[in-house]
Length: 81
Image (cartoon, rainbow, N blue to C red; front, side, top):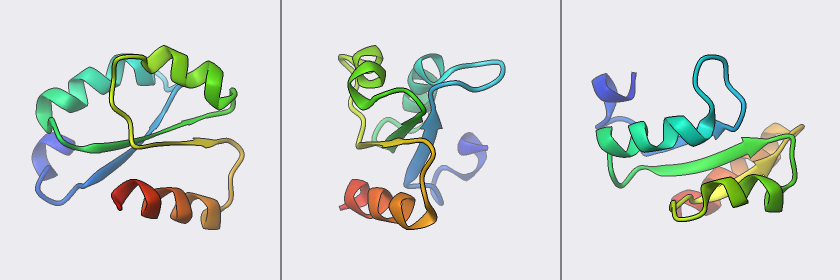
C-alpha cells in the first residue's frame, strides 16, 4: 500500500508483532520504498525493551499498548513535528 500511495503517506504506525512480518523486518522494507518516512513503533512491551530491537534505525516515536485515540494523536503530532 505504501508503494502505491507513498506521496499521500507521511507516517506509519508500525506494530512490533504483526502476522507474517514483524516490525523489525518491515522497517527496512518501508525505508526502501520511502527513505524519509516517519515511523512510530507500537508494542505491548516496554519502550526500552522494544526500542533496543531498533538500534541503528531512526524511528520518530514509540507508543505502548494499550493506548487511547488521544494518546495516539499526541504521539503522531510529536512525530510529525
